[in-house]
Length: 82
Image 1 (cartoon, helix red, strand yellow):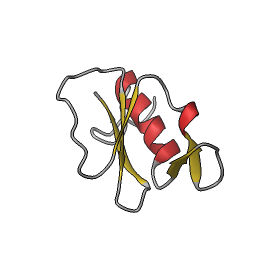
Image 2: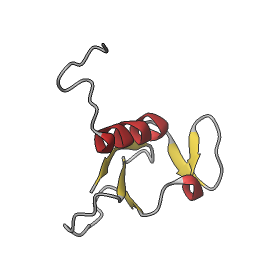
Image 3: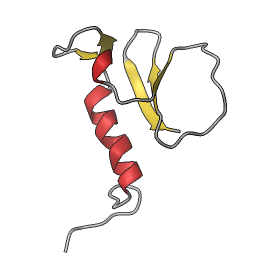
Image 4: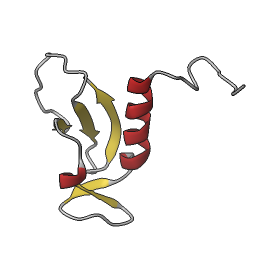
């Protein structure tokens, strides 16, 4: 039986999907090509919203939409679905 620690591991597919994208994107910049430090924008799932500092966004909730938060330095800080 696998170890399940609340808040650390989960069987929820939605949470697993978000964690997967967080691992792929966190600390990278978004570009038109993929390298060790960048991730190609065209490889992001549809729908995706890239949110830069100071950007205004709607409050509508779409559980399939990936929200990619980018910091002042242009690197992905975190991602959420919604």
